[in-house]
Length: 87
Image 1 (cartoon, rainbow, N blue to C red):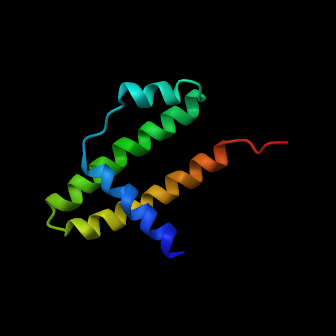
Image 2 (cartoon, rainbow, N blue to C red):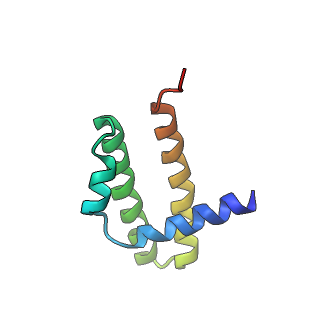
């Protein structure tokens, strides 16, 4: 459990940077369905904005990252629900 929590927190630190899709990432997501791409972009924009707004409100960056990590796992769950199970 601690490893998963740490991995989520480390991943959430990436959302302190502005939302963008690099050329490398674009190549990786080109084969995905449009619905998944849209959900991923929605998560990217929302989580980046959430981090900035929490820090601007005076929250400590560590607390902001924890809040972003909680929302990140919710988006991961939503994406997992969209992907069909292999037969």
